[in-house]
Length: 118
Image (cartoon, rainbow, N blue to C red):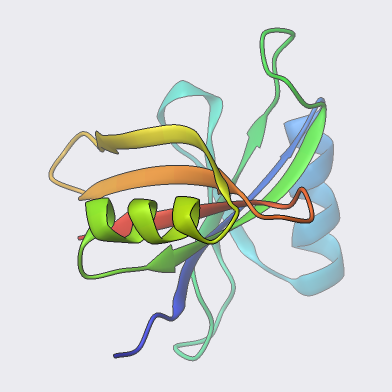
C-alpha cells in the first residue's frame, strides 16, 4: 500500500508576504481562494499542490508547514497513529465540496502532520 504526500500548507501571520515570497523565489502560480486561502500551483505534474493561508490569534501557532499523507481508511490511520505514540490534534472530519476527509496529528517529536482520505 502506498501513502504518498498529497498536499501541503504553509501558514503565517502575513499570508500576502508569504505568497509574494514563494511566487518570486520559486515562480509558483498563487491565486486567492475563499476565506483568505491562496491556492499554490508549483508548476509541475510531478509536484504536489497546496495552499498558503494567514494564521489568526485563535490558532495555537503563528507559522506552520503541514504535509498531508494520503490514506485509504482515515479512522484506521488515526488509530494506528495513536497506537504508535502520536496524538490526534483534529479528529476526522469532512471537507466541504466533496473533497474527502482529514485529520491532524502530532508525531512523537512534536511535528504536526495531516491525514487525508478521498
